[in-house]
Length: 314
Image (cartoon, rainbow, N blue to C red; front, side, top):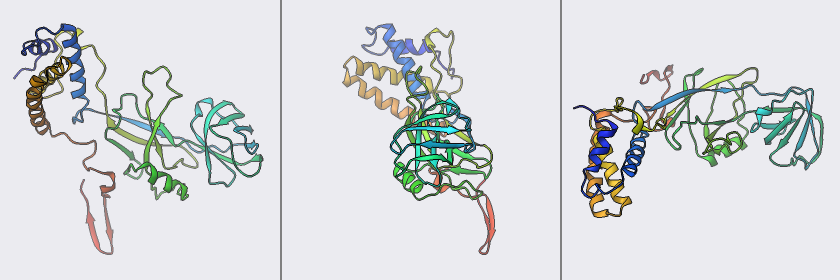
């Protein structure tokens, strides 16, 4: 069965009862919106990947800060203004402070005043990065696989409270026995003022390598490009199986019935669309980014112990 073009789907929607009076512009906008909504679901082909660079911790020079102040000055430091959002620890303190902004090579402002019981003069410090921005085309809230290529392990995502409790317990070293984890960390409201939406952020359990950078691999569900489909001549949904276009027309018609206050007609169309979408998902075997439902279920490669040989899945 040949797939329908965008224009054919729009014409099919116009032929539904009572929709011939709806403006063509509203139908085109609805079909385009439904197309993107459907494409953004976790289909097997709908993913992206990127590498996240975890820079080494920075501790060159010394710092001075008055107790109760948010201004830190550095001596023999070379801070980069793009390092906003990193964290800094003073001396041997286990308490870190997020950095609001860096004014130059020797001055920075914290998000809050320090409370160290005494002022610091020419103190040692450690500055590190543990918050990163999701890619701009990441679908918020969708499945993510964060991987550590060096030890071939998936890094589990944990709830925010559990993350903070583990951080407060002092689990901060970066070693060969890596026990990393991450959680969501709100939105980046500073670094992307030109975007209509601020990208989401994730935060790692502290893992800056002490002597050099490392990279992590992030696999994620990807938004479909924002394309004006009505202007693309002969546009077809080449990446999707037969039946996808029919689901688009059904769901577009149901949405238009809702918009134009015809709920009696919308419910029947919605039921048919839901059934066809369910069959379509079975046909293409949709799944999450990873083949396990939770990172905590991840099995190691294989090993030999006192209990015998263990061979896991590939």
